Image 1 (spheres, rainbow, N blue to C red):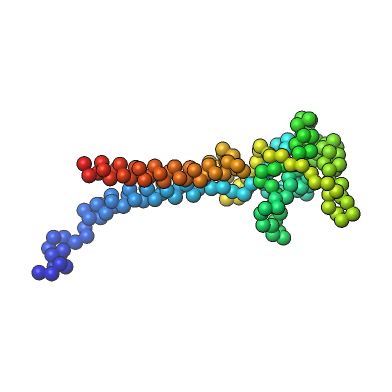
Image 2 (tube, rainbow, N blue to C red):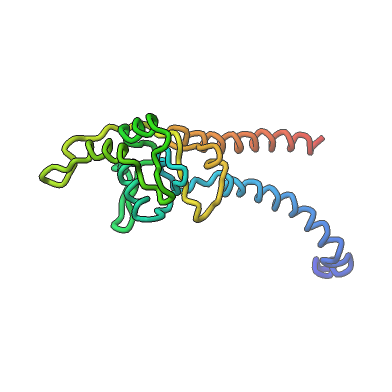
Length: 197
């Protein structure tokens, strides 16, 4: 008697075998979903420093006035690659003179379109005076920013954006991933021992 004949005599892949197969696959599917969920929960969209004291700031440029405000407040990021179509602004720094000017006044934004009050424009203009070559005559100082705006085109919110895990805190994202897999390692060993008991 051949093996195929034996399967026909015992019974082929019937409803019982389908139920057992489904129940065996269910934990693997759930485990895979749990591991892949980190891709979405811990996703890091593009971000930059928020314009100080500008409550309606978004990552996406809203108008030419908004673009001017971003250019005036946020330095360009020299470390990242820039293309002709996009400008990379600093993710962690804002110009110090703008930050100090916004800390001195509470009512800087005078219209719904986001026009700056004249004192903030003057503070920035003093440091942005162009020389003969079209570049600023002196280097503007920067400070770390404490608020950020995120690109919401892919994800409206992730754990990384909710807790502002950016700049010097980006290492926490790697630590979270490591902790999850260390837990899986010890959990697999413990569950293996329990399963054998």
